[in-house]
Image (cartoon, rainbow, N blue to C red; front, side, top):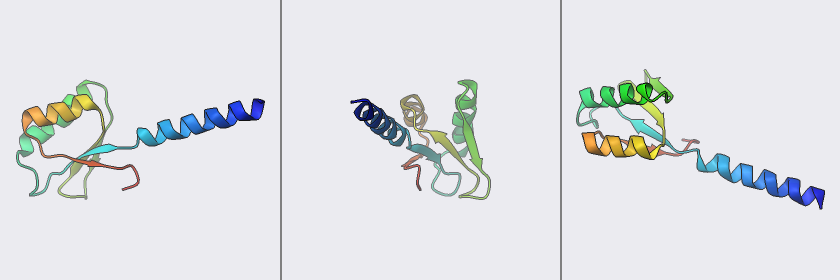
Length: 89
């Protein structure tokens, strides 16, 4: 019985970790419609104490953010081009 509980807890944690794996990529190359607003969303995320990764040598210095609905909505409102990517990519 004890082993079943441990296995179930492990399974739930594994699924939760995989669910949090998506990220928002904000490209800063030709695909981006508005570069200035893209910098603004990175600043917005930092103001909210969210992690922002700057991929300096990838697609013009793209930004990588956690996939949070607030950020997706804000990007849509501001007209910022984004890509949702899986953690493994």
